[in-house]
Length: 369
Ligand SMILES: Cc1ncc(COP(=O)(O)O)c(C=O)c1O
Image (cartoon, rainbow, N blue to C red; front, side, top):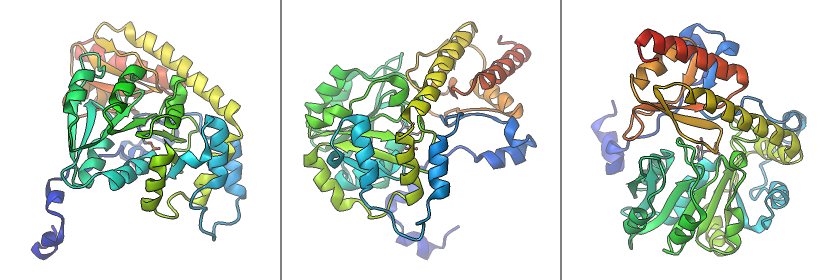
């Protein structure tokens, strides 16, 4: 416990700040369960089971200027991104993961009392980042199929609203947001953050919209499709009118040299990486089909590298815990709208088999299946 003297120094709102619960590190899980690392089926953090490009691996191994600070603007990476996205490199800013860009956007736009609107359930970092700047997150419920409800969302936007944050495909539900909805939200004048962490799996992006709308920011990452989650590199695509302000608050060396080198090498190996993306998409469809055969489940369609399922009978948390004992990890959310189900990251076919075998045995034992 902190002393009273220390507590008095804290921002008053920190005492009620909820923080973020990350997934447990791989190594600790293995130790805790007594299951060797290579036998753990880690389907809880939307990581890419195929690993990064060999070119990215080599780029990090061969790099020899670790004693020099990184290029603050990441010019080489932005040039490679310009080709990848067909968007001018002058519209691209790098982050230590796209998470960091969410934080920077709040730093740029949110003063205490300002609002950020989102559609829940969704990625919990929108709440975390808004609250960490003293902002108010306004959470508009999605409908029963997790679709964004446009009219209530528009109605929630008022003079104090600085941003609307929406993931497409949405995490954890997997569904994309319709272009017409994004257009209507942009017309409100609020900054609309379109978080495309899984765009490569969906095959659709709003990045080109940043040429036409000054109030859109499209966030992308190398964590998922390029399997660089551990190196932390993401980026935002901005309109020139907004990025000029963004530069003022960006810290100079936020993306390290290893991350930049690996990301450049990944963009030189797009065919290889997209081959793995296609494998994951094919496996998503196969796994989804298998899950749909289970009468006690509702399986939501997904355009990403994960599938959200809801239990029509039985206790999702109990199944999740029983899977864990077998070394199979999925993501359960102890929050409104999501309690009756969990999210499964799509892994390799053998990971799906371990999950399905576990679910069959557990639900039979519990009398659900
Ligand atoms: C919707 C969404 N946005 C952003 C992120 C963060 O990605 P990054 O690893 O680039 O910080 C994630 C990670 O899971 C995510 O699901």
